[in-house]
Length: 99
Picture 1 (tube, rainbow, N blue to C red):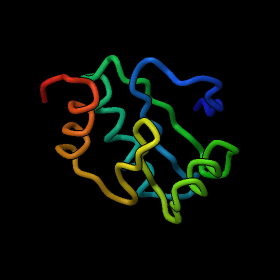
Picture 2 (picture 1 turned 30 degrees about the vertical axis):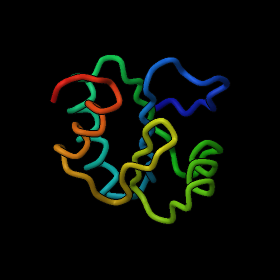
Picture 3 (picture 1 turned 120 degrees about the horizontal axis):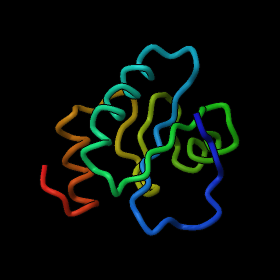
């Protein structure tokens, strides 16, 4: 599970999902993201540990107090829950792809 700090703005959409090691709902989020992401090959997906420097920066900078969370290009898409349809719609809007 990579957790790099971005050093530059990517030229493609970046989806980061923030998780905590002992969070059952985080595993559900992760499974959803990993199921949907292959349908949007231009989106970079990164798992971010809540306890990491990047996880702390995402959380504090956006007022995220609970996990899991999904951040797409610095916009918080979801905290604690999101449907597959909602995730697909957000990725389609960002990438111009059809759902």
